Image 1 (cartoon, rainbow, N blue to C red):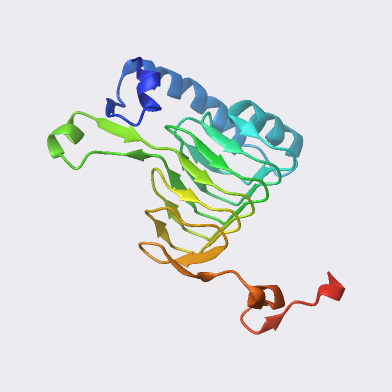
Image 2 (cartoon, helix red, strand yellow; image 1 turned 90 degrees about the horizontal axis):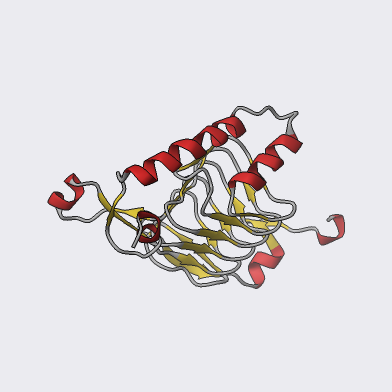
Length: 203
């Protein structure tokens, strides 16, 4: 396998291979250009994201700065995805984010891991496993999603959570490690925060 093929195979490979480092360096120039844009340059931001990302769905938006190992080459955004400031996407392999998902500030999505064996880490070995985030999810501020995790549709991940394992759809999950707290239900359709009631007539 080539170095690029190994990146997406889930097997160990050396991330310091010259072929990989050259392409990363080339792509990072364009990501830096995106991060230098101003709020008045919305069209330029959209054009750069369409160029940089694997998929950038209609109505989606990423608030700069964006940090990504491969400048978003392996980052797939559905429609109407919103990512707030300081999204870190360690996109050494693919990250899929479904339509209408919202990502709060300072979230990290990391597909890359390293072996526990110290001798292998010393030789710059790593492995990558894809991340899948479903439709209409809400990822709270400062959450960390680890390699190989799948988050189901409509799930809410609490702020500061460390997601080490799959999370099913239609639940609120929190903590480090992240665990399911409860299912989303009738109460959530009546109250939007604690005892604050939803006024559907005003929406």
